[in-house]
Length: 79
Image (tube, rainbow, N blue to C red; front, side, top):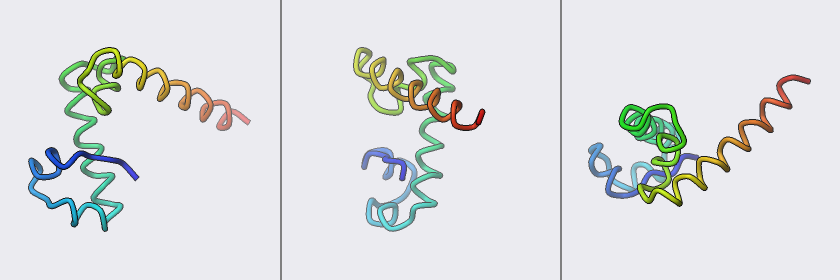
């Protein structure tokens, strides 16, 4: 559901096998990592993009894609 790289999985004290088989744990660790990114960079393009990569240009592209999807979701909710 939420992808977390192996380095962060191990940093949080889990094994990749544990996370692969537990969608709730995937969301928990993914949300934890996103929170770390937002705490570090703020609720900004970089804070959102950090979840995907630390490379600035790729982070910007990722965050823009996320924001576009969010806008589509908001349109559906308004119906």
